[in-house]
Every structure is written in C-alpha cells, then in structure tokens.
Length: 310
Image (cartoon, rainbow, N blue to C red; front, top):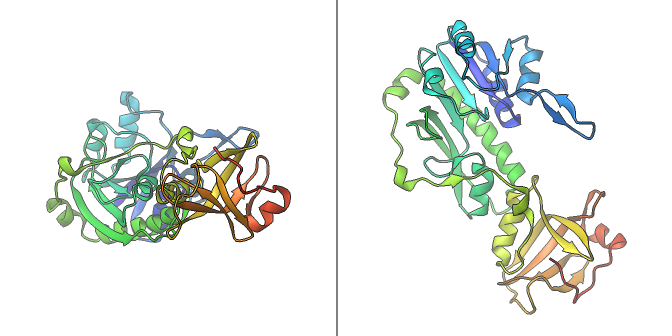
C-alpha cells in the first residue's frame, strides 16, 4: 500500500521504524513544525522527521490543514491509507476523507478509556491494572472512532511513565503491522466506542508535579511513577525544590505524623508521613544536580527526621 505517516515524538518514531521494515511504500511523512529545544533553544526536528530524512522520505510540516493548498498537497501523494500516531493535530474531516481507506490512529490506551493527550500517564495515576493500544478508524472527534484492533498489557507495580511508554510503543507498532495485513476486513468490522464509558486523558501540566502530602502514600507513589520522566514530582525542603524520581509506599506503616513530616532517615530511604501511610523516597534530585539514589543524595543533603517537606 501507499501510506502517508503522520507523527511527531519518539512513540510515533517507533511505529514508523517498524513500517520501514515492511513492503509498504511510505510516500510522505507529516510531522509538527520544528520546535526550539535544549539550552540553546535551537530549532530541532522531531524524532519522526529525523527518521524520515534518514530514509529520504518527503516530509511535510503544515501548521494546520485550513489552507486548501495543504489539503491538495496531501491528496497529491495518492495514498491508500494515512497512519496517525501522536501527531499533535486534530485532523478535520476534509483530511480524513482524502486517502482511499481513510486515516487510522495508533492510540496508547484501551479506548474508550483515556481519550486525549496523556493516556499513558493518566492510566498509572488512576491506578489502572491494565492498559494497551488500539488501532482506531479516525473520525473528526477526539479519539472517538471505531476500534479495528487492540492489544492489552498489564501495568506493573514498578512501571513509570517512561517504561510504560516504551512497552506501548513497541506493542503499538506490532499491533499496527498485524492490522495492516487485513486492514480492509478489519475496517468493515470495526467496533464503535461507547461514549458513556469514556474518560479524558488531559495534557500533563507542570503544576501537577507538586506533591500534596495529605494524599495517601499509594496515590503519591502513582504520581511519582506517572510523572517520571516529565514533569517529575517535586516537593520543597529548606526552600529548595527536590524532584522525586522513585519512591515506594510502605503498606505496613501508619501515618504517624503530620503529612509531609520526615519520620525516619536511613541509607535505605527517607520515610515521609502522608495522609494515609508513609512513603519511602528512593531517588531524589536537587536543583541543578543529577538524580541520585538516596544513599548518595544524603551525603550532600543531610535531611533529618522531624523536618517538614512541602
């Protein structure tokens, strides 16, 4: 098939890399415009664009598809199918109708649960035990189209936003390749979503990173895992911002002090009282420094029992 691929971040690049191992022809790649990145704020191509250029695939980077010229350019590729993975634009119906078989999307949740921008992190934050990927026939709505194929995996107790992202990226690519083998039959038998069962995975905000110690240890641990590696959960200590990369809820401990109070400091961890139970901090990062295991962190930052965080 002649395929147009639309995607931007690493998650999408994993799928594009898998497509490049097949006999399908990737006739064009669409990606978000280059953005400033790094300390120098230099304009940087997305991972998808970089991969496309390495394989000499034409790259298009429209800001949107409002202009007729942009839609005509897409139509000129005469694609059978457009595959969309974390592209970053909500495509209008006029674009969805251009490819012969329409547009399909690889989405990192078990739709209709977690429609939206951050399904991986929201699933961890909510304490879901399972997630997966869906191959969806796209409609003009946000992740509302019928599902043509899905695959499930468990969310492990140690999964972070990073580890689950990588698992789902690989699962999404494999599930898509399976779907392409019989795409037209799967499209004809697509299963509509039940809107009443839907939930919304809002984009992550930096303001969500601040730990509220009145929450339970279990919920704060989920927050820390979900926001690893961005925006990274944080708290205040002696007017410094400490970023918390790893922690563990202690199921056998009661909340023995005011939430946010350091209860115990050992080389195994810093135990902090929460609204329900204690949380053991395991990997921390001071401003301008690298993240360190607690044993190394304490050498330079002597936190003491009785001090208050938050």
